[in-house]
Amino acid sequence: MQSKPGLGKCFVTAAALAALALMASCVHATAAGEAAVVAVEPAASDSALALRIEQRLRERAATADDPIALFYLARAYRSVWTEPARVHALLAAVEAVRGHGLDAADFAPARLRAGAVPAADPERAAERELLLTDTLAALLFQLRHGKVDPRALYREWNFTPPPSPYERAAELARVLQASDLAAAVDAYAPDLPLYRALRAELLAQQGRLAVGDWPKVAAGPTLKPGASSSRVASLRARLAAAGERVSEARDKSHYDEALVEAVKRFQAAHGLQADGVLGAQTLEALNASPAQRVAQIRANLERLRWVASDLQGDRLLVDIVGYHADLVLDGQPVWSSRVIVGKPKRRTPSLLDSVTHLVLNPKWVVPPTILREDVIPGAARNPSYLANRRLRVVDRSGQTVDPATIDWSGARQSGFPYRVEQQSGADGSLGRIKFSLSNPYVIYLHDTNARSLFKRAERALSSGCVRVEKPEELAVLLLADSGRWSAQALQAALDSGRTRTVDVGRDVKVLLHYATAALDEAGRVLLRNDIYGYDAAIVAALDAPAPAR
View 1 (cartoon, rainbow, N blue to C red):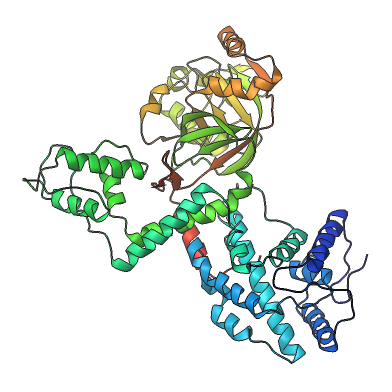
View 2: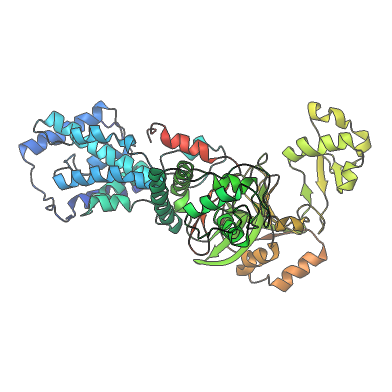
């Protein structure tokens, strides 16, 4: 099937035909407040405008994969902006994007208002028509999928990509059917509890920003409960400004029990260890300005727009910043666990993946980064390094190599032709279970022999893989559908000490997700420490001119 003149050759697939049919049905549907389109010859002025719209699309080199061209092709290039109320609703929707942490300036509201004035001349009317439709398409894309392309920030990014041009054209047609366009546009954003809560928190922080900054807490040494310091007065003032009930103490310099409890509540609300100790991280959180919090919220609203479509169905969600993982099956949370993630120098990447299989009693093959940066330098410094860690060197044929025969000091420069591995066992680095994923970065989930580390509040401690505190429980749930793996059967297999590969019983996607905002159990927003320093780049991209997408 060849497209209309000016759109180039268009070899339309079955999916494309279905999308075009949907758009055509939307065109002929009756929208509230607008008469149904009837199959009659349009008036001369309408025909002239339709012809000019088609010519305009041709002049801007619109191709068969341009959603705007597809949208107008399905409606025979008829104008959609015939009702003043619809135009006013679009203008209102543009202004409302600030409530989503987006920038209304991306949609040139002044130019939009000037260009929205109806015109009798077909040339100007076509220009107006496409300006309004382009704006709506861009608005819908930013609200549903985000302004920033995450692939430009993270090379590993592989979450579900934005929709095809045909789907975007169909989205336009559906939204334009709504009786309340502004509400329909606003509802196009992710329908997630955290997204809604962040929008409310954004409004609150913007209100605080209009009032002024928080009182600052003076820097100084770590302040522990029961201590006395001149800084206590500024700490009390800061918490009182946030709505905490911290009555004046008789001794204004005493860090008393009531103030300690208020600090603990603040720490819990910001993902910090709630110990009441005023250390560096708590001080940083207390002194974060409303402007900084607004930026943080905007970054996290954008992150949710990137991944919202993947936060559905069976999923194992690893909250990198929260050091926590949750498994949802059949719409119900069935498991949660503390985890350990990559340290800032060896970050756990944001990935969409799936568990391909489990390895019981796995051996550990040292990955390239750890080999290059840890093992080779360690062996060069200390001849006992490998033996102390139960590591052995293996050549390409699988034969063990005597470490004493290797020039470890020159290995980093000359390359390393061997594999270093650790045999299985409860005291091995992978513990007794490995959850293999399909990514090419050697990132997976696993048990660990260093279980005491789960007691720490900040757990960015690994070399990138995710260590799981309760791996046996997770394994039983993932293997349940096979009908062969009860908790007792799994335990027996682990106790045998034999290395064994086991296919999982169901398809469960894994999301390794980085976010500096979350909800606590009471539904309150937690604004957390940016452990990898990612927020600033997102905010900078949000503040930059919008890319063409």
